[in-house]
Image (cartoon, rainbow, N blue to C red):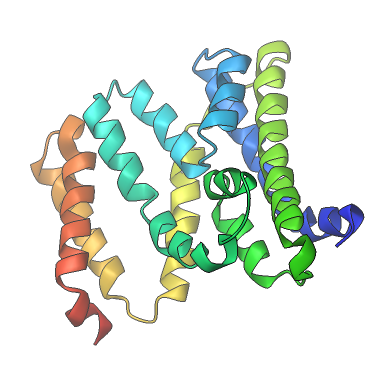
Length: 222
């Protein structure tokens, strides 16, 4: 596949990653985080929703344990679709390590659906993955720089994380034929807000929800 065709293939991801990356950069700027720290997060962490979550937890003075557990549970889905790429990455060279690192939801979808010759598969995979990360990093830098040099009203921008997770929840609900996981998560979330202190609510609610969903998998699949 020619590079121009790869760029064309990744345009839908670009249309989503640059605006969302700008939102992340602006949010980081509103928290007085220098643009180069936001850039480093997008280069080294590259976790999308995980980066928004990290900023929110930093602002809430969460402990390293809470940040680690919340990030692990949020990104647990990568473990499952990552397993499905073992065969596709088999026999590849050193580029395989970057492909594993850069495997996001959108990149996974493109790698699974793109038509390419076996001879150029590794090169095409690397180009798709690198372009998608470039879009995200570019959006981050634009948002972070604009937030520092252009007067901007940040009122309500912290709601971007809430909106992001609402959209993700709706999409997951639409893909899940059973409403039971959503019901369990809602009940645990509401109970946690009432019973648990705000500083401990997130980590305990996420851990309990994950344990129940795994333990009740047979009931959920009915």
